[in-house]
Length: 174
Image 1 (cartoon, rainbow, N blue to C red):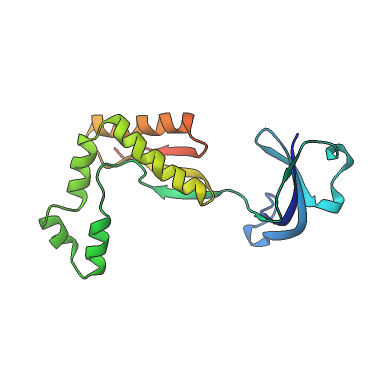
Image 2: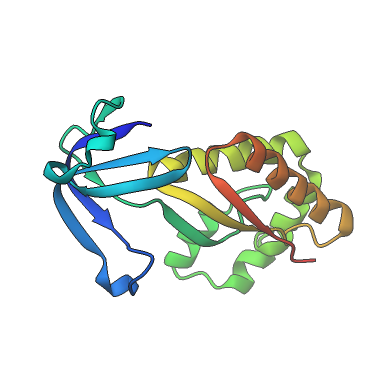
């Protein structure tokens, strides 16, 4: 059972207390087995049963629980970043849609994208989220607006949940 030691500060969110009771433990350590944290606390109180276990060096860093993104549309075709810039520049949604953008363009791009294309794009997004500390993602379908396209999005989520380190919780919006 590995023990993470040399943690500058360990952010805690005890399950038996309100979230407002989150705290910081300085000079901390934690021990885990599989995906379960078995002990966390000050390094000088590390129980004897964990001494001598393999050590992972926390490098005097802050350790926080994994973040949960509870509302995403992770799987979609196309890209609408330019629309965001246009909105910031004062364009209305109607103007963007009239120019070929908006949700209609996303639906068309999602329907036209292959399963592999959608999976690669969603995986890249998950990689970025994981790098920022996100460990669980709720992910909606909804950009297909037909049975085949919605099921294609859900298949992407099924595959990524099996292959990626981020846990996915899919929501069907059909």
